[in-house]
Length: 116
Image (cartoon, rainbow, N blue to C red):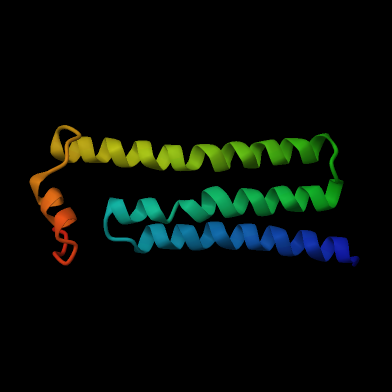
């Protein structure tokens, strides 16, 4: 077993663990708002680790370039998808997307707890 194989195994394990821990967080989270935060490691850390593993294994070949491209697309679209999901959930919950009076009051007085 070479150092290259060890590095590939470590990167793949790291990517897999980030997805497994994100999934566990999704199951453990109580509200949909909290669940949105647990999607980030699966959308950012895992693609980078897997693309790095492909690059270590194959170098900058066609497969390596495609892995990097997929990782970049996932990194760029992940936050957009989370934002769109949160916005849709808020519209569904409140009927429209406006700042509520309670939110304005808590923004002016940060010591007040939010009512979620």
